[in-house]
Amino acid sequence: MRKIFMLIICVAFVNIFSACGAQNSAEEKITKEATQEMSTSFFSESVALNSGFNMPRLGLGTWTLDDDTAEDCVYYALKVGYRLIDTARYYGNEVGVGRGIRRAIDDGIASREEIFITSKIMPGDYNSPDTAIDNSLKSLNLDYIDLMLIHQPGYNDEEVYRALERGVKAGKIRSIGISNYYTPRDFDRIKNIATIVPAVIQNENHPYYQNEELQTYVKKFGTVIESWYPFGGRGNTQKIFNDATIQSLAKKYSKTPAQIILRWQFQAGYVVIPGSSNKNHIAENFNIFDFRLTPEDMELMRGLNKNRRFENW
Ligand SMILES: NC(=O)c1ccc[n+]([C@@H]2O[C@H](COP(=O)([O-])OP(=O)(O)OC[C@H]3O[C@@H](n4cnc5c(N)ncnc54)[C@H](OP(=O)(O)O)[C@@H]3O)[C@@H](O)[C@H]2O)c1
Image (cartoon, rainbow, N blue to C red; front, top):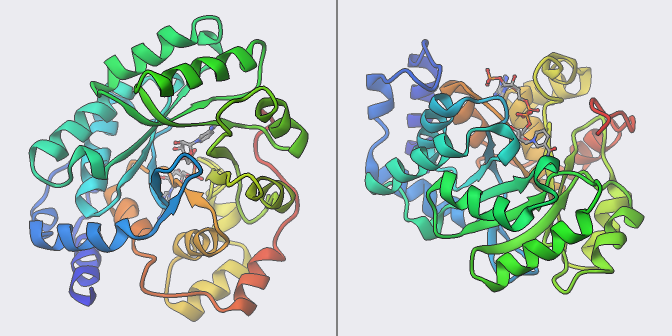
């Protein structure tokens, strides 16, 4: 394992021009053998969903990445060991994400079964959700999607959920869930019309907004919370990275603020999907499995909650 993390660190330092599109020799130093070892050990870091499928607990978010960037970032992420990729119809990059996945499969980095892909039905599709599922499959160029979510509450969302259930029955989707449902009441509205209990709720969740009430409530149904904006989102990251508590923990563990936040998310029981278009960051964000926050430090992180969201949808 030590050798593997050294390889990642090596990539992180040598790779100065690190946008996902740029290839470089340091990247090539990650051998196929090392990649496979990482993926095996990481794959055990997954959560068993109430659908019966396993979901990796750290993934790559792709919001704001265009098709070409998404393709390269997804490919690179899979190469350094990620097995969870998050996209959405709204992001307009399902084609690029699908190309990155295909390239990784063709290069023997991971098999389709080892990769977990999430997409989401956007409000513009709520009147034709069955077609939206087919369109996602087509854009991603996949036979099935691991997890499909309702992107946000809205008119007709209960019918959209029923379409997701039909997608499961037809073998087009493995697990289903919801996104941006923040209260037990919001969750119950969907659960009460469902024949398949949501496996995942994907919500804004970071040190300044920790919705423990929802996490505790949905646990009873085996539903897992997946965190978007773990760093506060583009334009807000420095507000969280410069937090005095996070800075001091970063110093204590010789890790970056991003790694402290992701490790806290991981130990707090969340699935987390940091977004990045930068190879250094993608490798750095995956390097959180060689340390553990103490219970006291987990409490310090918990104490940062201000119930403050950065978005209002
Ligand atoms: N369901 C929803 O409604 C919803 C809403 C928002 C997001 N999401 C999903 O959640 C994912 C995560 O959210 P997000 O990407 O918007 O925000 P985020 O993960 O909180 O932050 C992304 C920002 O952090 C930077 N970053 C990433 N790793 C870093 C590191 N190690 N050091 C310093 N900066 C770093 C990125 O810049 P670089 O590109 O330079 O790395 C980018 O500016 C999205 O990509 C998307 O898949 C879902």
